[in-house]
Image (cartoon, rainbow, N blue to C red; front, top):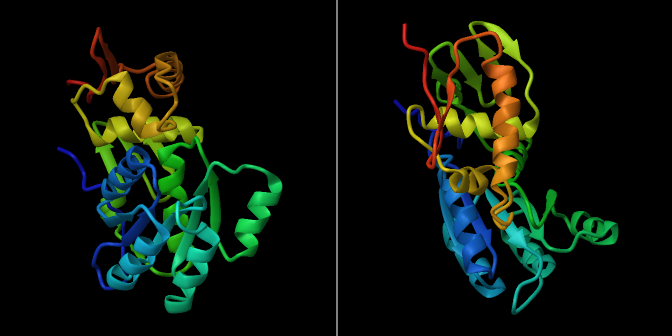
Length: 243
């Protein structure tokens, strides 16, 4: 049975609200989907003007904001947003990756900065971090715990154990295992895992998924009955050990 993915809510218990502003339809759709997967309310806008209007109506807690928009740049949008909502969290999302661009974004008042291409898992984690630091959310402890057999993951504490023994994972390994644990007994294809864990335009390099599955197996299944299984021609599945 799948756990509810959302582990953060507003202090009053209602879902976190996030506005995604990007003029690339495919990217906006992928980012919006990943944030909704957290149980949050998400809206999107493709222009600076639409972003300001949507923010005025939606009153988001956080904004994922592309700096390069067709009508005005994201720095100008940030100024407009902060004029009406001084405490809204803003994460810049952009293809500009020079040190000077990063400094400009942060100096303008952005709270964080992610460059394209990017990992959806990292982006979601950064938004969660901004909301927590701003004190705009409360944690739902029960919702943050994923359990499959004797394997447990605390999404908020960033901890994984199997049979009570702690398992140290890299950020990418953690995100990959998180996807598998959110869909126990369900086969996930390499393409699905690429979309969920790695860059939205990673290029379909399925060997990266194979490599990280092998890393996970060494840490999760080493010396134990295996939980991560390969389904030939279909993908991978995480199953509790039958007793």
